[in-house]
Length: 217
Image (cartoon, rainbow, N blue to C red; front, side, top):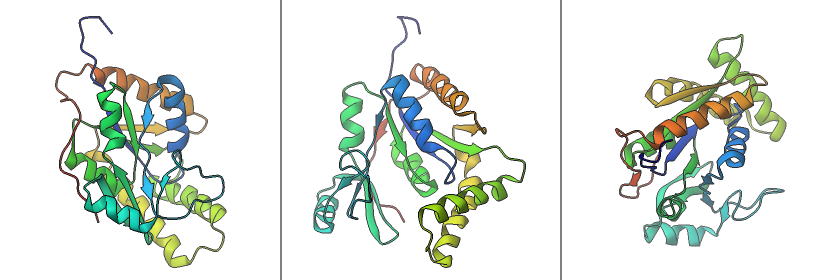
């Protein structure tokens, strides 16, 4: 990047079907850039090996609802009977320091951010497979969920699988589509690094700016 170009910190909105490798991609980006991962807040109890302030900010239901009333959240929702949301400070603080931010979300969250976070870069990650995209993603999603929750009710499992169709239907509405090929994690990370370098100096993209806080369905 030339010294005459202005570097604007970015907000990346990253989503895609379950099991596509979003976590591994984010870890790769953090190693390369030190990008700030926006940490969500929830009122559910920590799972084994989850760390407060890293995996989530864990608070009580009463505290979560107090923060809603105070306008602390840029986005929040009920997710499988628990509150989950992202506080404005997780985005605005790093941006003020000139630091890039990455938000991992689902398809509903991606739609929300595209409407309420001006200047964000929306990236969807999909996997490559020999079956149709929907069949392939449902296969890996089912294996991942059942491996983590062997006793998951069938209705709940089906709801998660239905979300794959919703994710894939949203692909065309994103700024970029990155295919995470089998054993191709490094290539996916390098592709997103190239996107970041371009968008940092893209004169057509406004600086990221949060609009009014709101919940989502």
